[in-house]
Amino acid sequence: MTITLRPATEADAPSIARIATAAFADSLSPLIFPRSKLATATVTEADLTADEITWRTSMYIKRMREGKPCVVAVDVDESTGEEKEILGSAHWQKPGPEGPEVLGVEVRPATYDKDMFAKVVERFTTKDKETLGPRGHEDYWYAILISVDPKQHRRGIGRKLLNWGLEHARKEGRDAYLTATDAGVPLYKVCGFQSMETYDCYGVLLTSMVWSLDKNQQ
Image (tube, rainbow, N blue to C red; front, side, top):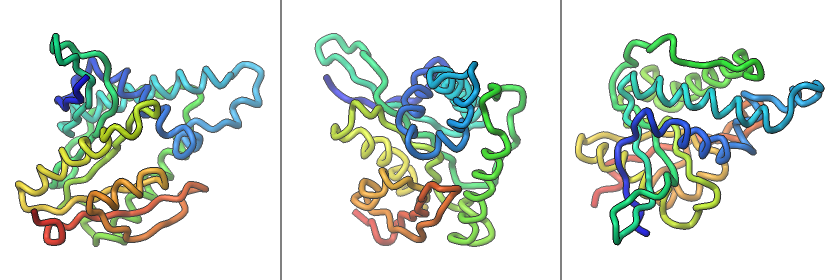
């Protein structure tokens, strides 16, 4: 099998969402789909997972329609050229001001904590501006979300997905920025990112990281 990158389509969104749900099960996911819901007799762990996949599917489609580039890593059969499965994805935002929001796409299941999600986004935005200045990540290639199927680790998938965005940044003479969970920090450091600050986001440790073009010239 060969790992290949290609642009994501809306038809890929459910597969991408399943991978992201698994990848962030021990970090950000419990904030947005709190396990306290399990205290009710009508909600199971499977319900929370299904609801999160539904929500993430809608969010991937929403971001694609907003023009934020998404790329997927796929396993391809070398003999037939047939795609076997999606292994991971990276959703990026190009430099520039935030465009108009696409409404009417996001699905919010009953187990989704919209207030906590708003707080997490606000925390991200505040830290972006503290780290990068009042424009936040507007001048950077920004990795919104990179996720790899936990069963496919150590195949170089995360590095491929990351390098896709870094190559675009390099061609445009830009730096790159992301917010990492503890699990992602080692890879990002190997790829040239520097840790700017590690902070608490409602019980989850996150690290603001910058990739500087000047320090990563080939």
